[in-house]
Amino acid sequence: MNFFPASFPRGGQAAKSAVLVLAGVAARARQRLAGQGSVLAFHGLRAEATPVGVQDSSLHLPVGTFRALCQHLAAHYHVMPLVEMATLLQAGQALPPRAVALSFDDGYASNYHLAYPLLREFHLPATIFLTTGFLDGTSPLWFQQVDLALSSQQPTASSASLGETLAELKALPDARMREKVQSWVKDLPPSPAPAVTQPLSWDQVREMQASGLIHFGGHTHTHPILARCTPEQQREEIFTCRRRILAELGQAPRIFAFPNGGSGDFTPETLALLAEAGFESAWTMVSGRATPASPCLSLPRYGAPESVWELEATVSGAFELLRQWKGGRA
Ligand SMILES: [Zn+2]
Image (cartoon, rainbow, N blue to C red; front, top):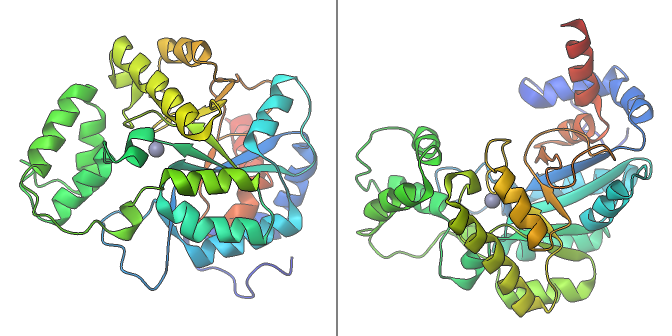
């Protein structure tokens, strides 16, 4: 336990996690849930000293925190490529003890500048799910545009907070949502985009691919919530994404992550299209353990932990065991 900070965290998720770890629940969970896997979903990282430049920085973990997470995982867990974990699960095989996989959604430049050096230093494989239109420069991420519009006090026909605005937009049909966002950003004054909003370049992607440490999957072409799209749009998003990755990397992607990733954010048509496009596994943002019983086109992932305590309570299965105990009592 020498990787844990000397001081006990005050309040919040970190304190709850620390209680579980120190009470021995993490150790017990590792035994009880052996053969299952934990997959973590990150987005971007940010350099601590630099102002973020967007209202919502929660998608971009401070790089110092990410270093601490990598150090803990390298010392205590078996971090494996996500595609290998998916193959074992599909074959109905138990995973190696303490199996963890790392993933990053969207395709931010910080994955290359800040995460990749640490992943190399600690020899940790990871998968980056690419929104191909974001990398192509043809399709800025719509939720970043909303953030920038609100940050620059563009009229958004609403005085709601960013979180409320995003929630309202996510409930709309995709085409209607795009119209609204476009009407807010069309008069934005030109200004340099904040560093955290920059996409990876395809050259950076190819360099990471050549290392053998980083793998790539699909995350649509323009990041819609697929359940808000017509069947034709869904097909276009999934097949364009596959085609662009194949063209740039010379290999078709085998794994996919759903934008937004809730259980209501994709439909049976989405799963049929993914299978038709040759995707072997698809990953949600629904929390849970990956087991051989998990459906291979809607596998669970955990959101990024924000401390080593939270990491340990998540990947050990302590949170999961707690949920099972609560469920048992209910
Ligand atoms: Zn995403």
